[in-house]
Image 1 (cartoon, rainbow, N blue to C red):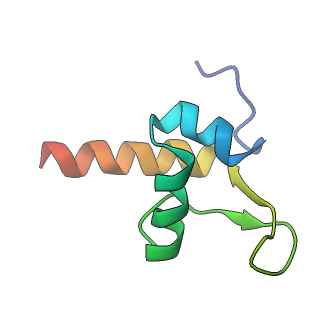
Image 2 (cartoon, rainbow, N blue to C red):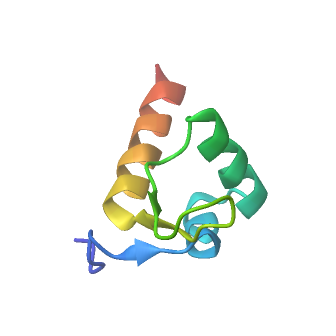
Length: 69
């Protein structure tokens, strides 16, 4: 069982460690709309980004399923 709160908000750096993708790759995936869902906490180009742990885990599960198809 996962001891982490699924609603926990993760920074891009934390998400990078979980997904094994660089922060830059996550940024590119946000721009392309192919990465995990994210929340923008402040407006503008430099707005702070957070990812819900559950969204990251769901995205990873979907990526794994797609790779196994």
